[in-house]
Length: 356
Image 1 (cartoon, rainbow, N blue to C red):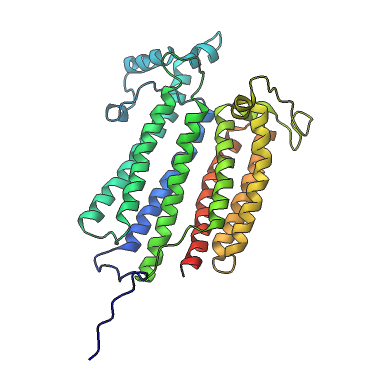
Image 2: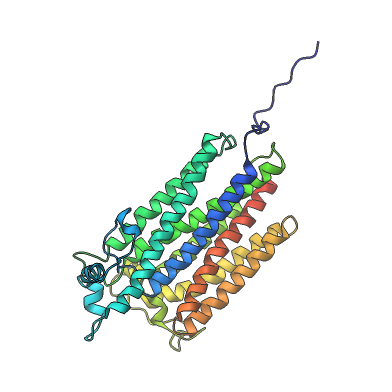
């Protein structure tokens, strides 16, 4: 008499017929595009010194901008209490039109954050109610929503460092880096999970991609480079030198170590720009290795990684040599987000090979 075979615990069971992995993947890809957009808007907000223009965090009432002259004057009065305004506005001060310009970018940045939260939460609830989430993905989707909530909290934590009783004329570069890196980690998670779901849509028995040793190495190298870039942005260290490959005519800039090694490593604009410049080529080497590892199985991801880091390096040089032109700097940050997305694609493809 034939016995019924039990499925191996190592082989995934066929997905529930109600699961909609392809629909979920498309939804996550839309959210990923929104995250790229908010990273770009965040870059504009930082470069235009707009982040402290809204001194309060009102989740609901903050949706609408000031609508009357009296409301604008009230917001402007709050901004004039900040150290940034007192130190950087100059003898002539700032007129209302200039304040409205910087207010717009910070308001738009916050509105996009709310849009992303709703664009994620509402479909997630619908998919959950319809039991359309494949087994094993619920915790991942919930974790990414937690990251979105954390982003909002980190955003206010960052802004709060520059308002109230503080000597800072801008937000803390440590908090800014946490805010930016969390957004990029979320972007990578969205891309990776969307790819897993697309694979599952094609093959209900497919296993999720594995995170390989090479992927971990590349992620670590990229983390350092992105952290350095966030510190350079937060400290306006891009203005430390406008020439390349030299810095103010020197290969290695003069560094003042009198504040101690740790303080200098985390605060000195000359050292940070120097490290960000040259660690970029360590990142390039790691990304080349990643792209070569997947070029036969996923040529699109391989080409995309090469294109992203090549463009990133050129835009970084252009940003420096243009005296930190707004649009070169913003484009540099945009391609940085796209580089994270393409690296996640390649890492996923590598992990899929290992899982297979």
